[in-house]
Length: 237
Image (cartoon, rainbow, N blue to C red; front, side, top):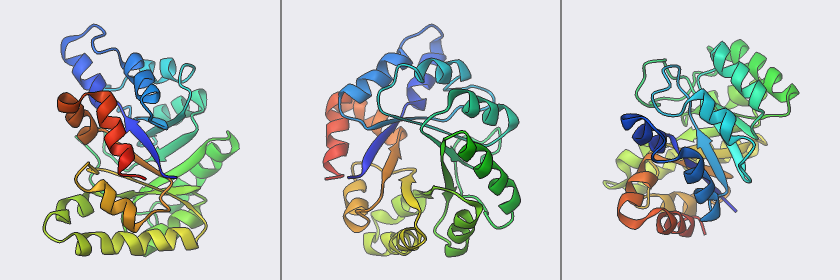
């Protein structure tokens, strides 16, 4: 069964816009779990413009489902992950001032760097995932680096879905098959939505986890959080 991990960064963005604690990030995370999400994802950035390091520390002891921390592995980020010990860490190649993730790792060029991190996190008992595109070589080097999983960057699929969904999904099926043959777990995320998620899952039913934030929170403005999570889970059945 594919797990739904809700990225709650946008909830923190809304809170930070006014200060205070409305909406309450911790309560929203617990409500997501209560409404059926099998995981919570956060992506703390150096400027803390949405999820703050303090949020990560506060969330860890109260969550009952899987906790996934994603981000660029700066020293501060690595120290946070080793302190918190989430179930999973997802490494993304984002620059500090980047608005959102827009590419996967070049795992070949950064092989030594990533290999050392896989060892550090692995010794701490944290499952590792590397954010990659569909290039087979990048997936193969992620496996060589020792990653437990990869997370496929799905924005190219989402952007082409409306025009030609068969063409859009094809490289992802190929990449997902390579991941499976290499013995790694498979995650996916970025711009997955109620429009395109069911077709993605229909073609790649062995995906372990999808991480969805922006679209899900936008849908919740109209449908409500509980109904929205229910609808996303229907896409994964």
